[in-house]
Image (cartoon, rainbow, N blue to C red):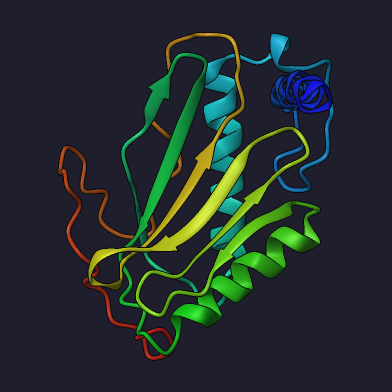
Length: 187
């Protein structure tokens, strides 16, 4: 019994230390650290880095997919940016899309946290060295969504994304429409 009691607190301390160590600045494409920690990054800067990571993976997936911005959300000390894929990705091509995103993240030194091989709702989840989490997941009606979650950063106001979608912006439209763009390759 004593041995178990000593292990639990040690495990909790280790989990707490690991959770705190994920914050920091990062090169948005390689995932490597390049700064003095999250203390110097605010939510706006984290949102901009998240946007750059989402732009990079979308650029790496070939042929191009049409996308629109999803909602931005903030939490106590972090921010999440989203993209919704407006191109119809057939069930037969979903794994190809996920494989290309995963390969890009591996090449960029992101760590793959999980891969969901579900036939209906497949997904891939990765994390950067500085603690940004990124994912591509298929949800209702086969629509693909990309998300980037920042680590804990300084609170600040967060402006809307500046990147122009490569199709309709759907500003003020929520929820976004289902995929409605046909592609010779993806659809």
